[in-house]
Length: 364
Ligand code: GLY
Image (tube, rainbow, N blue to C red; front, side):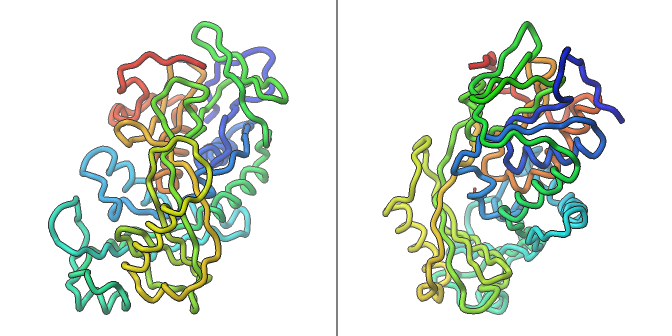
């Protein structure tokens, strides 16, 4: 079905996506399957969630309370196998998708929204030998898993290129211009771009362009080298999370810091991560550190994403995915593509609309 676009004249593209992270690329790939000219502007900032995330697919282990947000996360998890298969077949590249399950070892059974399978200490040891002595057991989420977000980003980029998506890389958007209820152009340091429709996927950087309540929530991370691959049998999620890649790299995350855009690794951040990681799985004390990095989650006041229509008839929003952007990528792409193809925004997704916050929205 063709996108119902209210064409501006002249236009250089049918749809212009502002933000080349996992969400922007996922939407671009979906749109480019059925549409003509799709473009992406990407500022190439350091600290994007696409590069910084651990890639956990964890609606269970993240303990998302029951309700519409959890349903959305579960629906996206269900999309993953077919979505990944399509991307990998298109590109001939792997994303490192691994539905390995996630275990959440605990020191007490009280609290939280756990709904996994309970493992007592003996069962936990069979499941994952070597966990810290303080754990009394753990919750097992067999349907949770992981994807290598950096590989996924590269695969999405390649898929988008093969589908003819036009890239405007390393262009920083300075301003989005409007006239009445229409966006008229996107101005970058390099050029000004016009399109029939625009999609905003700028993650933690959103508030620089639009007065939406999306803020950066910093996370510091590190990676260790396990002596044997993979270092653990599944993801382990305690006060730190340990995400074993199939090649023996172990990703350890993450701090959660409300410090704005404050680039860099700190002594306190690393100390917190290493202490929690060693307590969770003492054998990793001897593993070499491969890399440290940081990134910014795009957090909203209610920790749910902002998806769907905006006050401008040719601007659609897909931002604020906070801790679940990698997980929510396929369902976001599906929903935004469907909306741009003329379907109304579903009423059960009102919890994702920008106007739930009760503020007016201004371009900055
Ligand atoms: N999804 C894990 C995190 O945001 O740290």
